[in-house]
Length: 136
Image 1 (cartoon, rainbow, N blue to C red):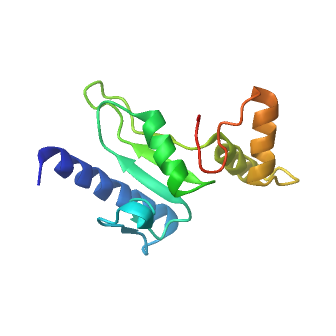
Image 2 (image 1 turned 120 degrees about the horizontal axis):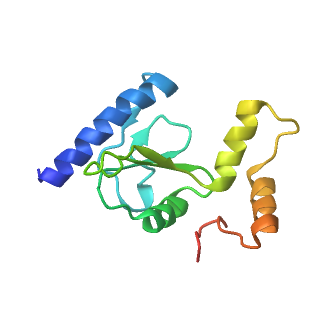
């Protein structure tokens, strides 16, 4: 196993422990599923989770890939730049973040993903998180 792959595996192992604390003991690493069957790096979580262990981030590339795999709800779990002792960080679509924020604060009425996306488009003039594409 390459040194880079070993670091990625260690990062996924650390995240697995954290995700089990939040979602329960049934959460597992997904293994080596690739292609159209790739549903993220973890199984037993309510939305797609992608673990990234690299000093140099590729945010747009990661977002586009996650958006293709899961239309509405996904999270990129980036270790951060360990050379600068930055991180870790999580990246999610804005509509998903707003949905979580509404749920956290029990704001009524609740909004659907589509309604939040429409509000973002109205405010920004751009629909960044259209189904199946990010920033295209």
